[in-house]
Image: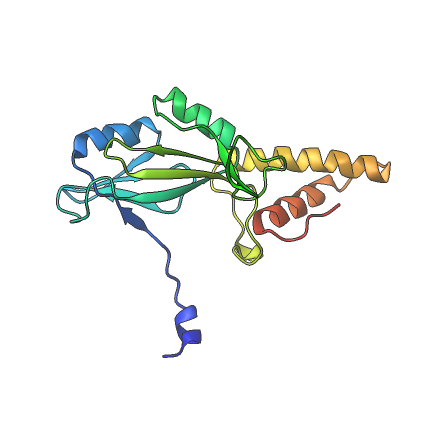
Length: 199
């Protein structure tokens, strides 16, 4: 079997195991985040974040890793809204920061570049989660034929951004665009896949 043969085999990440000390306490925490509690076999607790194709699971005998040694990344379309929602659910989230020329800097960066706005929080065992704001993917990370929106909120946010960009497009052309649905679709797919945006 060649590398090309292996590339033809779909391998989707299904679940990541979190090392925890207290299963019930951790179950309450992820339930409070609004993550979906999935059906599993006995002794396994599994949650899926809204819009995610990958889940997390934990249980008393799933891993020998030290509780709190896990680390994960959560991509969000609006880090300010995500942080506010988590804090409203009683989660302590550190202040938003970004990587600047001299290292870590407080607050949002000026252009809210891809993956730059960040904030962290931890579950009760200390497993770390890094929130990263991203509205589009780097080129090549998403197949344009498979670009999807993972939730109604994700789609609604993309529509709002397309509406604002389309308004600027109509100002530049000085004409009403009767094919705005096509323009929106092109914009939203380009933004999602990291390809050149229509103007």
